[in-house]
Image (tube, rainbow, N blue to C red; front, side, top):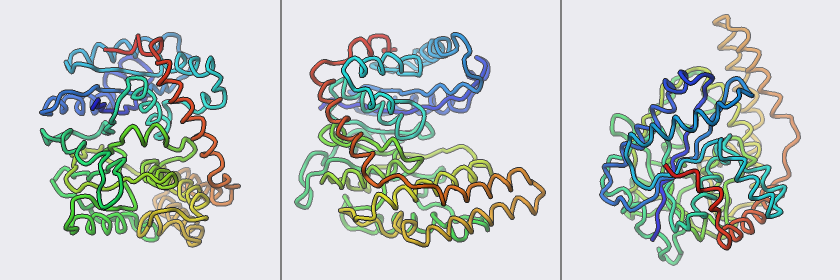
Length: 387
């Protein structure tokens, strides 16, 4: 069984000095270093890296950044590492254009959570991987048997169903699994934490190891090739692409279960007010999109989360929460942020995408594209990616 560990990395910078000091680079190196603990080293490390330049069109900045990253990874010393940064994106797009996937290649990118994950899957297919394990860059592996646990029961029958994928827990820095209660008053109608903890409690109390779940976590996710060669992440969704993937898989009769034993330490950066404001905006767009997608029903239960946010109450809930956040900023005299929060309400009234239509078109192209990669390979794209 050929295995790949995929760690998407996001780097936002302007100068080479900013890149060297970037939090994303520091976290990424920490995650990669933690892989040395693994008992099973028979895997290929795939690193899709988004180089997000603050100032566009700086001549040579991608090439310089790409070379710097390769030198940094060599210092880490992991064998079989492939780095695919924004520097290599155009050759991949050219590959798909040559093979007549013109519309498809416009949705292949490194910007955006679902797109960078899809790029990782394309690389895994080019390397003929049987299993991919997604880890986020703000995480570390603490269990030497993590890869062994990740691969257990995969592509095997469990309770009459073939297990095509598995999700696992995030462990907090203090060793707990449940999320701390939210303390921001303006989120009292948007209490995701409560519903997510309800799911974690139910899974933890189960007397079996593999459990059906209405959500999964993208930073601790295992997919078998039968699944990822048929089902891509949805490139049209703003965030929550991991649980959305669960919905997509169910649409095509694939089963993803939650594995109680699959755990990884989550050491996310401190989250400031800007994060929560952007998270709210992205959540509103995401839930509106998923509401359209699931109107005709899905093959799995989405209760209590994200189902709680997919009802008609999403509309007043979105408007009132945006108003409360705006009021919170206004009380503190932060008028620009208050106006930005008010502007979020406009997204509630925008025309929604047409349910499954766009995704199903992309999914059909995805299957054909991965079949093409399986036949032809992508040697020209990969030859400059190895570290």
